[in-house]
Length: 219
Image (cartoon, rainbow, N blue to C red; front, side, top):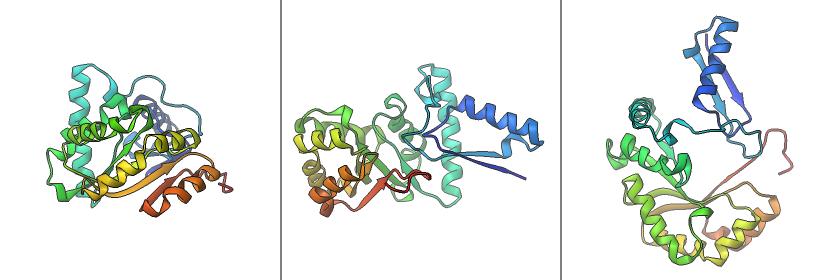
């Protein structure tokens, strides 16, 4: 027997997830190791990740411990026939990209995985800052190109900022140079903002990730 639990949350801290598993095990007799928790990554659910997560902790012992665990998870993931990995520059206090380098890109040939990264608004304020940021992401991940690259979290304010900084034009040029294989966007804003974005740049986008809550199909 197993338990599959789906939560309308962006994510859960590891210690909270462990507590949930144990409580379920105590109530049902099903081992905690057989309790699987999935979060939908909604950006409008309640906050359940307060405090530092494992990889964002600065303790060297914890860093080594969780990198070792991450390597095992990556191995199992690939052995099971999956190959898609997603990160962003700000995830886990900027430690997600280096963690992927240690657990994935330094250990497997480039054709064994698909890697997605994102251009996130907090990390640039001008067009001139975008290319150095992009190169820093490549270096942090230990790769020469990204398979997929997203214009991250397009909402009303960020759409205006990306236009002002010519972020879309810069990303399009990076794709032409072969440093991005497929260019797309993610959106957590209103349908009006997404429509304005697609009217302006949709012809250049190959894919999109939108937030669609289970209880809000009007989006």
